[in-house]
Structures are given as C-alpha cells and as structure tokens.
Image (tube, one colour):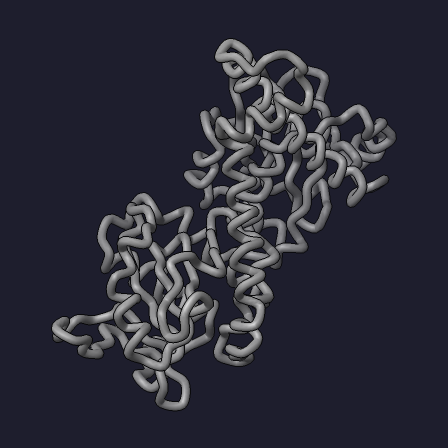
Amino acid sequence: MEFEERLVALAAKVQNQREAIQTEEATKNAFVMPFISTILGYDVFNPLEVVPEFTADVGVKRGEKIDYAIMREGEVQILIECKTATGQLKIEHASQLFRYFAVTNARIAVLTNGEVYNFYTDLDAPNRMDEKPFLVLDLSDIDETTIPELKKLTKDVFDLDSVISAAEELKYVGALKREIAQQFREPSDEWIKFFTSRVYEGAYTQKVRSQFTSLVAKAARQFLNERVNDRLKTALGATALPVATSGSGTPPAIESQAVVERDLVHNSDEVETTLEELEGYQIVKAIACSEVKPHRVVHRDAKSYFAILLDDNNRKPIARLWFNGKKQKYLGLFDAEKVETRVAIESLDEIYEHADAIRASVRRGAE
C-alpha cells in the first residue's frame, strides 16, 4: 500500500474502534503502535528502533518513563507520549515530554491520543521543546498539506534537517488555518465586529451584534459550501454525471445498462452537491480503502441521491447517500443481489456502524 493509503486505512480503524478504547494502554496498542509501524515504518518489536517505556532520569524525577522513543543509530530521534483516546490533548499533558526533550538528543516530540498527533520541536529556544506544535495530524480530518512533511519522519527517508527547516512556516501556517477554521465554526466577537464594520454603516450596538452573530455564521457556511461546489464542478467537469433514479420515490436497485445510458443525458448542472454529501463520501471512502486503493472509489451525484461506486461503474455500487430529504437522512446499502436497503441515520458518524456492509459491497465489486 502507498503511504496515503496506509494513512487512510489507519484513520478508518481509529474511527471504527475509538468508542471501544477506554484506557491509555488500549490506545497505545490499538492506534499508536500501528501508527509507528505502518505510517512511520519502524519495527515496534525491535528495541534498536523503538524503545517502549523509555527511561532517562531527569533531575529529581527519577524513574520517570516516556511511552516510546524512536532510535536511529543508537540515538533518540523522536519521543512519543500517549494519552487515552477519550481525552483531549493539552500542553499540560506534555510535562514529561518537556523534561525528556531537554536531556536527550531528540529534536522531535509527539503528543497523541491516537487520533490527533501534535509534533513539537525547539524553534523558540535551543534544546527546549516549544509549547505549540509545528505540525498537527488529525486522523479524523487529514490535512493533505501535512503528508509530505510527515513522510520526512519515516524510517526510509528520515530527513530531520528538512523537517526542522520547514517547521517555523508549518507552525504558523498550521496555527492560522486552525484559527480560521475555528472562526468559521464559532465566530468570535472580534471576527463578528470586523465583518459587520465592512458591510454595516450604523453604530455597532448590542442589538446589531446579536443580529450579525447569526448572519456572519450563516454567511461563512454558505461561502464554504459554494467554494466546495465550485471546486467540485471544476474538477469533474463533464464527468459529473447523474446516475439512474426510479420515478416511484423509493430507492431503486442497480438498473440495466440501457436505463443508465438513458439517464446519463440529464443535465448535471441541475444537481447540487452539498458539503454534507462530500463528508459522507469521504467516510465511505475511508472504510472502502481497507479493501481497495482510494482512486477506485468514486462518486456521482443525482437529484435524488449521491452514489458511491467502485471503478466508476454503476454495476459495482458501494453505497448511496439519501441526504436530500428535509427531515431524515438515509444510507443506502446493497446486498449480494445488488438490492438496496435504506437505513435511517441521524448523523454522519453512524455510517461507521455499517462498515462491514460497505466493505462487503466493495469486495463483491472487486471480484
């Protein structure tokens, strides 16, 4: 498997198993060790490469242990401290990392809960770990721009100098992106006031602030949706063709090739792909990637539903997203006879509950 495929596969594993992981030890075994092994490429059972429970006495802190130390040529290069998958990562959790970073040759420190990996170095002061990460890998929402930098830390192409030289820009660009994302989700008072002053000429009173709080949030959501749709149309062009639908109002099974070809003449401009559909597609794709390469999982949007196919072939359905209803969303799943069953879902996370059925459809299509 390619590096990106392994990353997607691990992300799917984390999403599927996260609720079952309740302890730090379980987090290490289920998520962190596979990350060290399949993503970074180090042998977790070779003490010359990976030392669990690494000990380096620090001042009065005798016998303190760090969860993992990754070694190269007998020297510590990367330190990893793990927290339980159910907890949030905070810099307060990194006290041992701070101390070990100062007394070893490590230039990279990692704080993780198995889903989010915060990477630190010593940009602010030599041999002293920074308080803010220069790289954040979130397996629930992988930022593709971080992948090349992550690759530099893998065993085969370990390039510490390149990572350190790019760390400062990564640190601030990443922090800015996360702050912008936070503002889109929950606009701060400063953000609301800034945009209000650009479009509203009156006094910025409490009443105006209350009115524009919802307006700014709504405008941000609409802007993001429009940008996603514009990029999708540009990327797909004429290939964004709808799939066949039945006129009965019930989801059809896979129809004959003649029906498919007839329906392909529909005007794709009448179809609006939503951000929610694309997010659902990414979840299904992450699940499917445990069976096939990512490029084989494609989507086609239609007026009634959003189809996810193997090899862009209507005869190889993986799933359908019925998200156009105003009240209820459905996930369409296929059996061995390619007969579709719609399952009601309340949130996108519930798609993971049907991972086995999705993988079974993929395997049948790949035969």
